[in-house]
Length: 137
Image (cartoon, rainbow, N blue to C red; front, top):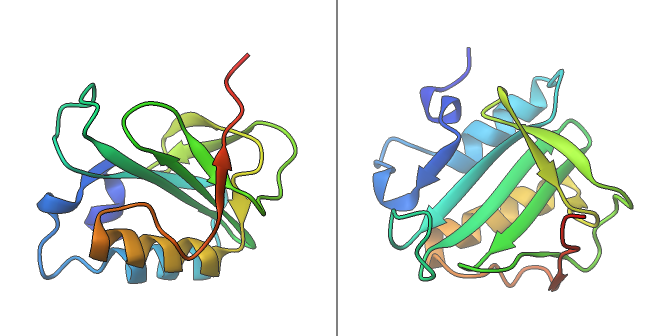
């Protein structure tokens, strides 16, 4: 059974309760094997999606790989050590397709570590190095 928190595509950290262990929920979902790549947009700051003060960490899991995309208001960043050379598709909350830029794929353990850091600091995770993401064509 999928925890209800994972059925939401966009999650603001202020909406999480003490009972929501997002890192464990994502880890358990992926450990059970996923048939399609799952993703979520986790944000901090204003809930207005157009606010330049909003910070969003997009995370995803797909069995042996995961994704990280950092969006600090405007622009996007991906891990410097990201593996995917092409654009890929992940599904927000397992339902809605979203494009993931090249170099966003990393090991799932890196996703869990970055997510835990973001939930704690609400800032750019420093457990990895980042680079500017390729703009959509």
